[in-house]
Image 1 (tube, rainbow, N blue to C red):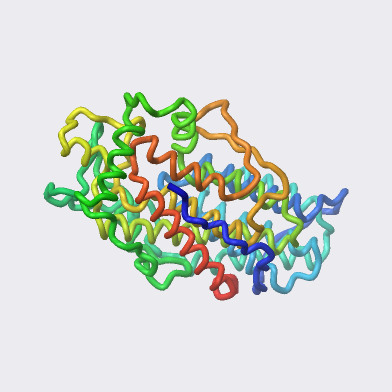
Image 2 (tube, rainbow, N blue to C red; image 1 turned 60 degrees about the horizontal axis):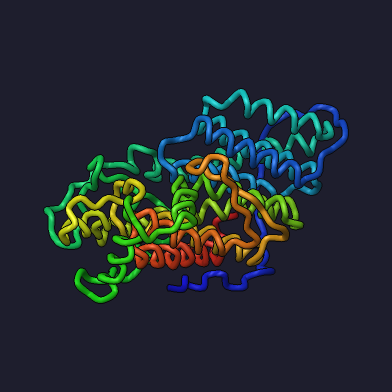
Length: 408
């Protein structure tokens, strides 16, 4: 079944202007200055490393850290008048955020800051720009205080409903309590409400579409499937890990290949993660509004009482697929701000497929693979995957359409 054509040609859509700045830092005498693009990647890698080493156990909380750091950096670009000033504002904003939200990573963040400042001229504009970045970060941190995206709030207990056809229940083999229930009550960055783009209800149990979807998962997603090919198993395994982890190198490729200004590269990172956070809030709203059971529960209820999926089922409802809402959001932002295709092929790896890499030339192919992967893993119906792509794309389009407000 063809995937929703989300790769709309939004190429050439430019990011809107930014504003703000204000606050502290020191700079040492300059040696040879790296380019502005290098500084964006330096802080990109520093953010990714800090989160990998000391981030939260909940993905959305880590996306929030990215969003706060880079939104602050984007806002701090206002009032800077040189590449050195823009780089200094970026350094101040990201360093302030990382050391506030991930204090255990203070030492590497300090080392990155020292190296960046050593490459900049020791002049008042640079010091003022670092100060502006720090102040912007403090303001965004204050704005987002109590937004419900801390791990405890994200994973508040879900009262499991009584068993009934179509209704979610804990899944084998762990029968773990539901996760991400609290996401739906968190405060978005841009969306008016978590339910703003809630998708229509999934196909009813017993309907033709429902039965076709379930039959596909039963055949292709089984741990003992005889019809799933090795290539399909490989795709399912490659895309099994955290969406944040898998998309971090994809976004990096877009940033590295971009010929845009330093300010626009910063905004790309900021809006990507703002949309990712809002998408995850919208995803949990839909999941817990519909509370649709997972394929393993449905298949066992239909008589195949020992059926198990290729990969263990995540502990939350089926509809829509969170991997695919993330993918739809990512594709939407990248297409809107970087164009539908990468400037050159990019290669990514996966923590769930050690030693394996995949190479892509656009942002759409990962979405296609995510849709198939969750079916072949046996953990989502295709309809849940396609609804996820649509939801993520809807959120991305809305965030880009309201970028000016969040970037000010």
